[in-house]
Length: 446
Image 1 (spheres, one colour):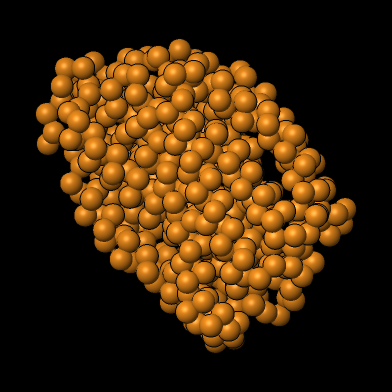
Image 2: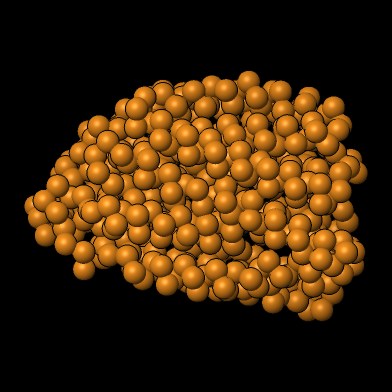
């Protein structure tokens, strides 16, 4: 067990180990999560919903993608309860195991042509398990860094778990790209078994992630709370009831501020992958779209790093409000840019979309934990984050295809613009949090 310093911070070596462990863990979790999104766009309509046709099959495929967003809040509350009661570390080990098991099982799942209707049913169950695990993963990972980080550097250290998402998106796109190219990009071979390889490879990543996470001790802030005045609160009322009763407004505003973040991210990583390869969309080749996904993942990671670091200097709120304000305008510009019809236009649209996400995603790793008291911080931060995920990540990809079919692609842009207006309003109502004391027994309501 790591010795807990009086100021709640840890030595440099421990901080480096925590940063690496949080980045590796969330990369694995989100890699597993994102390869599903890529597969949902490229192969699942033909593998699990062949009888529905191209359009209906795509809608059904993205409906299974959305199932995870129903599971996410359930996972956030379940794992948040135990994360606030027994600690961050042990809870994070469990989320990693659940995610890895579900992902490997999807890679082994027979298609509808083999086991009929049981295939999509099993797919939904496994997708629920993925969302359940990710729901508990994010809050624990950011708490790991935020509660270890010294004052004045929480934005910097909170970058590391946030990097899991852009690294994983680039890695997932790269894995599918290499798999397709290795197989000669033959559609039938890719549909038969090539798509399964990225899912099965996750077993190696999970093993590495478990090794790293088991080396990490519980956070100093949680250890202090467990042994100090907040100990009775940790064992008293349930974390969920405590968070709702004392900081329900912070959950709503924190969740609302991230709606556009998730909408733009999942539209970029899931829907635009389908749009890019569709003859009725950009009509680009699969390797071209996946290559652009790698580039966009790099842009996403770069803005996440810069803005997470910058949030220690200019504040979290200013960057989150600014990102959402830019998102209002970009929502209206995105599909006219894509409508140019060239590969460069598609790449520009994808890169700018994910870069805007990174501007907000960088500060969010510190902002949401800073809003909540230690006794219900895992639950509160997870609830806010996954509220954003449901409203911004589940609904837009699901209704995007019908919207485009009925009113044209620009209707999707209008939807994104409206969601960004909601987010900028919620973000403007949040307090600035970069100077809060993470060890304080109480937190001012947002």
